[in-house]
Length: 110
Image 1 (cartoon, rainbow, N blue to C red):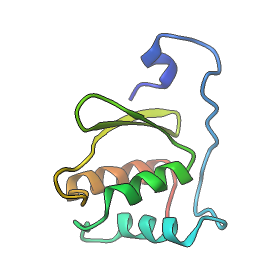
Image 2 (cartoon, rainbow, N blue to C red):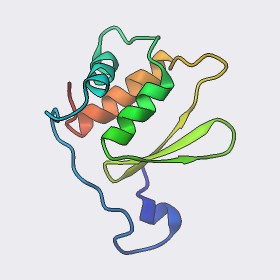
Image 3 (cartoon, rainbow, N blue to C red):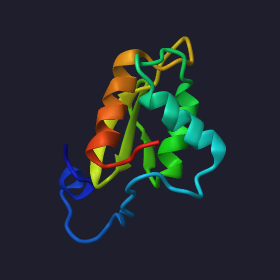
Image 4 (cartoon, one colour):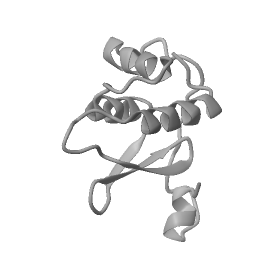
């Protein structure tokens, strides 16, 4: 994945990334429940996308709207692009699995 600087073609400290490792003990209960749902097995197909976006923001992410239904997420010094689900608000299992693996690689666990 590209960092923001690589994507923009700039150098310097444009994005301050606050590392997030392990469970944050002051995380709001709603975000903690969403994180637990992301890590549930088998993957849940009824996690609302807006709850996942709120979790990203709670972890310190920057979200940018892209063309169509794409959302660019800057988190852990990486850029990820996800498709906002439509017409239903529920996130598909493939996206949930991708998010879980991304969190695991960056040591974010429930």
